[in-house]
Amino acid sequence: MATATLSIDLDAIAANWRALDKASASGVQTAAVVKADAYGLGITRVARALAQAGARRFFVAVAEEGATLRQVLGPGPQICILSGHMGGDTDMIGDLDLTPMLNSLDQVTRHLESLPGHAFGVQLDTGMNRLGMEEPEWEAIAPFVLEAGPELLMSHLACADDPDHGLNETQLATFLAMTNGTGVPRSLAATGGILLGPKYHFDLTRPGVGLFGGRPYEAARPAVTLSLPVIQTRQVAAGEAVGYSSTWIADAPSTVATVSAGYADGLPRTLSNAAVLWDGDTPCPLIGRVSMDLITVDISHLAQVPRYLDIIGPNQTVDELADIAGTIGYEILTGLSPRYIRRYYEGTA
Image (cartoon, rainbow, N blue to C red; front, side, top):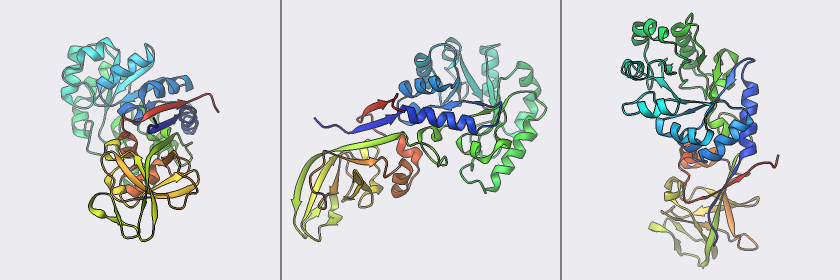
């Protein structure tokens, strides 16, 4: 039976990590961010490929992801938890040697009291107003925290994908003011920050979406192809409608393919009557509404019915599909359905 297939090029992911490592300033360590199941691509195979490429430090969102990653990688690589030390995480952090990035006084207190001597880092808010300690809170507790020996001081850029945005320089200046003179290794740059240049690199960079071929890393090797099976075709007469609410009406006799995927598989309804699928290099318009499990595609111009049509691949990147949907590549990637069969390719480069 034909199945929707998500093909993942592990060689491309490893090559992207090496390229971003090379783009980081000399002497700077390059980590890998693999939260959200490695951006939807499967943390087990992806993390192993990155470790083989040379990554020794990994970032995930929550401790549960860290536990999964530790099982994948075994002892040795450092696994940092961006949400910090949450209530109930203590045993997991201690037993599995996870490194929380502490975000508040409450987390500092919890960590130092429950796991004295255990590795930790500190996340500082330099202008995103999301995670991390703001300047007044940090100034109040910095002497106490620094005495406990954090392994990393980090922050996160809000607008690194826009090199001309003024907040980049503002956040850089704030980060310098909050961390200069501490003697602690520092990290500010994710993928976009790496591309902003060496003054943003400090001691550690943390590429994420760029590893998987996403913006703003335009030089990335594409890592993902999503091929969807054609499960039925029909002839539609001029004037007949296709799909829910009759939003597409044939203006001539048409051959319509019904394809196995829908919004339950991470294809937003905003792709309705807008997206394009590909038979090799030939575009085929998505017609009608995206439904839960199915989409319909006009293949009238094809010489024969294809077994599969690609919605992500050489002719349409994740970001280009996201543009059509009115969202971002991150959302498309992380929303890829577990119903897709994942096929991994490596050793082909």
